[in-house]
Length: 227
Image (cartoon, rainbow, N blue to C red):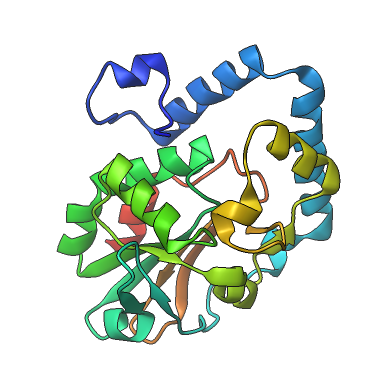
């Protein structure tokens, strides 16, 4: 499914700030999703914040772990190879079923030429299978690699992973969000959304991580740090 509101579907590429796109999606969700369901998601976010997941994730100045992961076509993409050419922007996202992930990656897609002009590359990492990444890249016409991190192995090294609480699992199942199928394992684990910029030595120059999956950095902010 391609996540767009009716207003967004009437246009081409949405060039509004990401915060405006997300505000529209939040308003639609608040309009149509039961209050009890919204409260479950709010409790899950609050619990993650109490655990300090964002604060404990890999920080600016730390060395990021190397990775070699399959892209949406099954081709192995290596961080080491990319870093020999320049800096690297890495986005961790939850999956193609999340409208906020779709919105973020569509917005990042629009700045791919500017990222490349700055001498950097962009990849996005999620626990979804290669097949799911292929569907997402095709549906959203993404121009950068979507890497499949089976079992969240790399996300664990970045210290981003949590297990979806049981009550939230029940909500996802009711909404036909089948993470065991989408991710190819029974762990019900996801990364919190996070964006990193790595220098050629894999040192973290920039980090934006947030336990609230409805908040992501503006693409323009990423470009400012690359410049």
